Length: 441
Picture 1: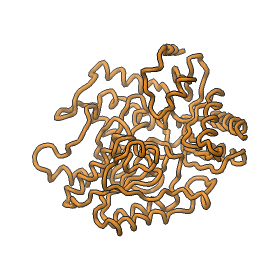
Picture 2 (picture 1 turned 30 degrees about the vertical axis):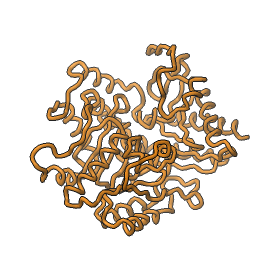
Picture 3 (picture 1 turned 180 degrees about the vertical axis):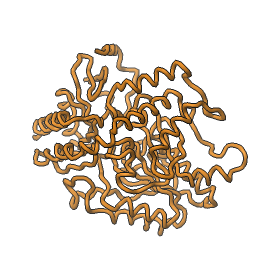
């Protein structure tokens, strides 16, 4: 058995992200180690991971192949810069990623997170439009309820109110499409809902308003962090058509949908739409080392690079772009995805997982259930005057009963590791059902 991590004796120094710090530090719930489908507490209580960490440990925890790859690389070279220099494993990792990205998206720019990937994609889009003589295209279009990380670019095109309003100023020249959540027509849909493709036509209104000043549209194929909003049938296809019609780049944020989450290596394949730029992170290294990447269509890369003056073509990058340890982890993680066909396993399990999710339909206060691949959102009726209270209490009940879930507002989101088996599914939804019943009042 792995050694249990020591208990911290001081909780003050760590300002925790996206956390009610005062509440947590008053009653901390700590994870000490992880293996396979589960975390373990300091008291060695098993906690079944219903969220793949934070949408990211798609191959499960503690995978020996990834651990050994990181250890081996650390012994060879811990770090090397990629500004005007190179090291082999960064190029190997980029080539490995490009083997699985959609056709044409074979130029890989490494970052350190999904947030950095989103900001990088937006900057590449602006650079592309300028390079092709369309310098007036400076406007970026996101979507209501979209999440693209926490950089100023990401929160500007993002559409989750609390992520934006605390900070005041955003990027200029940003607009938003309406979200696609239509509960009156689509409540309790299994997979992609039937209604809502017409929501993409809002882009025509923005073009009519702003003219030829729009550089790019960025959307998630499936919006995860906002509470699992599944794209309506035909919506993304229509968005692709409109971007092509108006000379706008289409960016898919696949930080969540990449690496098998909805049953194909990248979500673009599942929805049948190829973007011009695709962002990724999380599952790229199975979260063992922080890493993100942006896959860029060859036409975009060549427009920026081939006709540029001698010297640096894109004034952008990060100290840790293509970090050796992260590159090693990425190669090992992708090899695991291929050798174990994790996307295929997710596809094979999705109907059973959907059955489990929709078995909650008649429980108290459940007002909608949404699912696609190995993702599900269970929306609850919030308590009057106490938004989020019901979901947070269910989160605590589940944890105490050995299950990790995720909540956003009064929505429960589930995204387990892709190595999940039927008995894990039964346990997830059985525990969750008990917790929902317990919070019926």
